[in-house]
Image 1 (cartoon, rainbow, N blue to C red):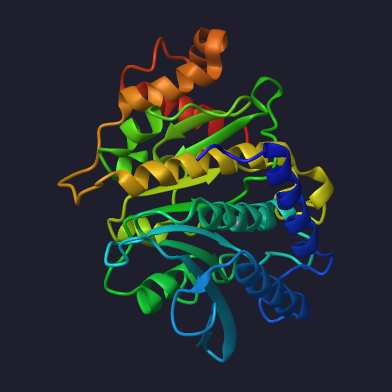
Image 2 (image 1 turned 120 degrees about the vertical axis):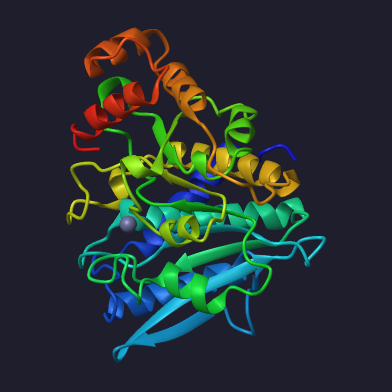
Length: 332
Ligand SMILES: [Zn+2]
């Protein structure tokens, strides 16, 4: 399918962020969280998904007396016996504030992708749209973390074919020349993923840098999929000055950039749906692939970027290690 008018996608993303990201925030156990739960359930219904399990999108669970709720809807595939694709993002907030980039933007992108998939008539495989609870502290990477509970308690025997997780995907990267950057980790999780990504033409005004997850660690909900050996990609624009601050508000997001991320993601889903992504013996060697994404993203500034990191080229793992740690030292 041809991607719909991108300005319509931009408007839909903006409407969802503004509705979800209210001043009181979405901390577990608060009224704001309850409002957010109703919003997510309503939107999954409106875009035409089916519940992943049973008759409800809501998948409640409890931990030490605290009530949590994951949500999962599905766009049925043509062969429902196949392992599904999954897209996911958390909807809880770290502080009682709008938390638009963390993580309203990602929720909006997942909803937009679900809607696009419905309009596309579905894929060969099911597409699960998972909106997770409890990603933020004090639950981060602990037993009640929503994505961990979903993967361990709710996934059926088909498992997951390929997962894409989003966090902090609404903002411009705070580097003058690289505002339109998007980072991806996880291409190393399957030998076919680098080729799959290289085969996609990026939307105009979006640049992608793909590198190893271990440079940043399991910063979000992809951790449980990575540990289970499921091929995955984690998308993020990194941290910025408004990270976990009351100033992370809807007016500061770049909705056009979010629409481009949605467009790229839809292409990835189409290819992962066709792709075999067969269980593989080992991780991929992604040095050349990663270097290519840096080279394309930096363009004529590539030599400058290398010099800044104190390396000659990105032809070895040690050189990419050096550049990654230099980039991370800027606060990304
Ligand atoms: Zn987050």
